[in-house]
Amino acid sequence: MKSLQRFLRIMTTLLSVYYAYMVEYRAELVLWVLSGSLPIILMGIWVQASQTSQFALTGVEFARYFLAIFVVRQLTVVWVIWEFEREIVEGRLSFRLLQPLNPFWHHFTSHVSERLARLPFAVVLIVLFFVLYPQAVWVPTVGQVVLALLVTSFAFTLRFLIQYTLAMLAFWTERASALEQFSFLFYLFLSGMVAPLELFPPVIRTIALWTPYPYLMYFPASILVGLPVDLGRGLLVMAGWSGIFLLLCRWLWRKGLRQYSGMGA
Amino acid sequence: MAAILVEHLSKVYPVAVKKPGFKGTAQHFFRRTYRHVKAVQNISFQIEPGEIVGFLGANGAGKTTTLKMLTGLIHPSEGTVRVAGYVPFQRKAGFLQEITLVMGQKQQLIWDLPALDSLRINAAVYGIRDRDLEQRVGQLSEMLSLEGKLTQPVRKLSLGERMKAELLAALIHQPQVLFLDEPTLGLDVNAQVSVREFLREYNQLYAATVLLTSHYMADITALCPRVLVIHQGELIYDGSLEGLVDRFAPCREVEVELAQVYPPDHLATFADLESVQGQLVKFLVPQASLTRTVARILSELEVNDLAVTDPPIEEVIGRVLRSGAVV
Image (tube, rainbow over all chains, first blue to last red; front, side, top):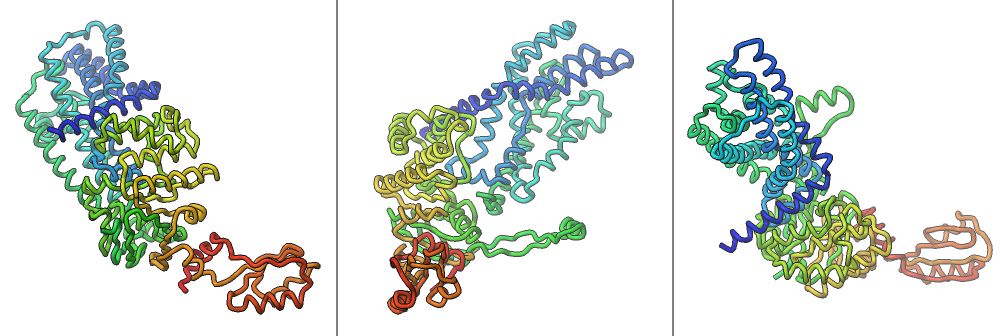
C-alpha cells in the first residue's frame, strides 16, 4: 500500500512538473498541433475523390473519419526515441540512472502531460473545422466516446512501447531514430492515416489487422465515428503486441545498460 | 566497513578506428575495426566513511571512467567494487539512496523551470516528505546562499547559482557518498570558494564520504587531506597531499634578485632555471644540493636578495600529472 502511494505521488509530481514544462512554450505547442494536420489534408483529397468515384465511404463519412484520425493522432503522437537517443549520445541518461526510478516513467509522464497541454488547441481546431464544414458534424454517443478514449489510451501505450523498444537500440547504434523513420512507412500506410482500411484490398487488410499498426489509429477512430470493428479481436491483438513489446523492451533495457558507456558524462 | 572499496578494477572500451579519406570511410562502413582502450587498469583503493579524497589525473587518465564504475553507470571489465556496502552496477534502490554524482559539465535540473520543480521530482522519487523537503531546502539553500533563487527558471540563473542549485538537487536526499566530478568547473573565484566551503560544511555536518575530481588545485588543497593520482588508467599514488609534494617535488625554489643582468646561459650553470625576468631569477634546486648551490650563487653572483621556498603545490601536481612520474 505504501509503495503504491509512493508510486502515485511520483506520477502526480512528474505529471504536474512536465505539464508546467510543456505550457512554457505555447507557440511551439500550437505548431506541433498544426504539424499533425496531415489527416485534414488527406481528408480534402478523399472527399474530393468520393464525389467522382464510388468508395466504401461517402464524402461526409470520409470527413468524419479523417477528423477522428486527426483527434486520435493528437492523442497518440510519440517522440520518445529522439529524446532517448539524445540522452544516450549526450550522456544525460546518467542522471536518470542515478535515481531509484526507471527513466521510462519520466518519458511516459512527459508525453501524457503534453497531451493535456495540447488538448485545448486541438479542440479549437475541431470546432473551427465544424464551423467550416457543418455537414460533417456528428454527435457520438457517450458510450462511443468513452470506448474510443479508452482504446485511444491503449493505442498511445502501444505506440509508446513500440517506439521505446526501438529507442533501446540506441545503446548499440546511437542512431536508433533511423529505425523509427523506416518503421514510420508502415505506420503511415497500415495505421489508416492515409486511407481507411475499408479501401485496402482484402488480403492486405487481413494481413494488416494482425500487425499492431491499424490499432494505433484506424481502430479507435473507427469506434469514434461508428464504423464496424471487431472490438474483442482488436483489444486482444493490442494486448498481445503490448505484451510482446513490453517483454522485448525490458530485455533490451537490461542488455543495453551493460553496453552503456555514459558518453560525455 | 569502508565507504568505498575497490579491488583490481579495470575497464576496457572498444573504440572504432577509421582511417582518413574516402577509402577509410568505405572500409569503416563495410568492415568496421575496433581497438581496445584500457581506460582503467587494475586499480585498488579503499576510502573510509567521512573521508574527503581528491582524485587527480590529466584529461583521459581514467578519472571519470572510474567514477562511472563507482556510481554503477557502467559495468567494470574486471575487479570488484563496493560502495556503501552495495555492488554499484546492480543499482539497488538502497544504493541509489546512499550516493550522488555531481558533474560540473552536466546538469540534471530542468532548464526552463524553476529549480524547485526539479526538487519536487527528486523529493517524490527519493520518498522525501513535503515537510522534510521544505526543511532540507531551507537548510541547504541557506548554506549555499541560494535563498530566493529557487523560484526563478534555471536558465535565468548565473553559472555559479546554477551549480549551487545542481548541488542542492544532488544532495536533497542526504546521500552518504558523494562523487563530485569537476564541481567548480567554469566558476569564478568567489563561487569556487563558496562551493568549497559548502562541501566542507556538508562533510562535517553529515559525515559524508567525498571523492572529488577537479582541475582546480585550490579545490584539492582546500578540501582533500588525501589524494589518489591516476595516470593512463593506473593508480600511481595514494596518500596524503603533503606526501605527494615530498615524493614528487624533491626540489626547492630559489628566488634571487640580482644586482645586474646575467646571460641565461651563465645562470643555467648554477641550477635549472625556472624563469628569468631581467634581474629577477628563479632556480629550481634539488634538496640534496641546496646549501651548496645557494652558497655558490651568493659567492659568484652579485645578489641583492635571495629567498628559498617550496614550489607551489599546483605546480608540483601539474608536473606529476604531465609526466605520470612515479618516484
